[in-house]
Image 1: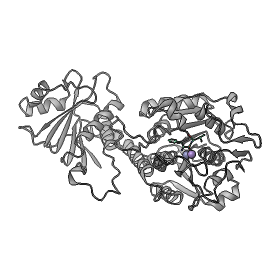
Image 2 (image 1 turned 120 degrees about the vertical axis):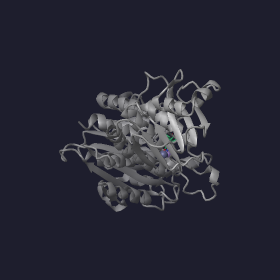
Image 3 (image 1 turned 45 degrees about the vertical axis):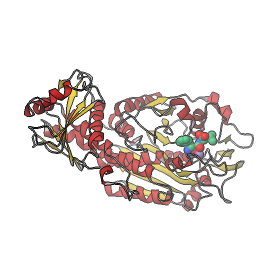
Image 4 (image 1 turned 180 degrees about the vertical axis):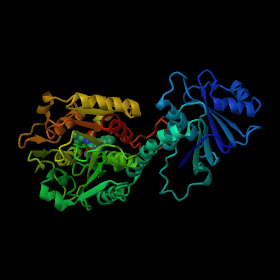
Length: 490
Ligand code: BES
Ligand code: MN
Ligand code: ZN
């Protein structure tokens, strides 16, 4: 979706203008009202539209303007308008007209600030996302008609420079959504590694370890998950060294990339199992974040590491009761082959620690229990470092990808102690998300670490947020980009 900014332009296609609560017109709304000889005000009077956030009033082809469609979009309380509310405004407008027949969407943001202009465009881009590549019979009226976005604003230079990093962020979100949406017959571990390698195009250095390389390093926890798969397991390492000092300790991001999770020998029930094509949502978030950071040439050193496997039942698959030794030498009794994500993560974390990171953050669709705890509104945050946790909470608020902190602590260790090995990979029904985090904690030492459980946020069956038009949300990309901008760059 092409986005351009202009100081003035002839109205065409769909034209969206902001109306604040209490029907307070923006300059764009006033201009249209005048041009149409009061048609805007008359339409407002005959409707329940009040300018509240989420409210929308469309006026087809009013006389006096060349616009095909005028869209009054609620911008909420004028004093409360912020970056996120402008994103919502832009997203709702796009959602309303995406398949309307109009070919372009113009936002008249004159007399509003550059952040408002840029965020409206960003929200509109997120809302225009579709995953239609496998539909061959989509009828014309169901196909998106909008092909470009134009934003009218006063300060072109400021708006363009506010939008540029957001364009890269939107590209990252798009990539993450594409990866999560792809079915597992297409996006298996080997193919995911190839997609990661495509980030070379943006200046990311990408190294891929195959099974032989991982065997040499002793990464048996990760490898044990892929034993039953016909696809080879992979570890992809994506480096973006954008800081002034390329030797400065990097931020390391780690992602769970289970391209499909059947549960393995501890097979999952059939109903709903199709969603487990998204069990690589952590790896998608990390890959999308690397795309965003490289795309906007972030002045930070960031390394993204994704553990790519497929968890299948098979004669060669790992059995319940099997004991494996992780790369750092700790032994794990695998009591349930469906608790596979933590096995992938600990070896990927171990690999990440070799870079002596300033901080290490993992993203994983790790536990169903986090959905029981937090629903689909917040991701679970676990950390051994208050400063890191607080920075992530703040980045979550600012980006709209919110996280909620839950505890870890030595009291939970007894739940994962094993009779036969250093630990077992499940902790029972109680505190399921915490025992998973406690398990990871045993592998990170004193390095500031955070674990973000995105099982409830990586995809959603339905969302009331117009920024999330499909199942896969791309959760994590905006959070990371925001975190890097506020804590790793100066
Ligand atoms: N990938 C699942 C977690 C999950 C569940 C993600 C629902 C998204 C939606 C994970 O590998 C898993 O199976 N976890 C088990 C752990 C249990 C066996 C200790 C779970 O949550 O049931
Ligand atoms: Mn599982
Ligand atoms: Zn899983």
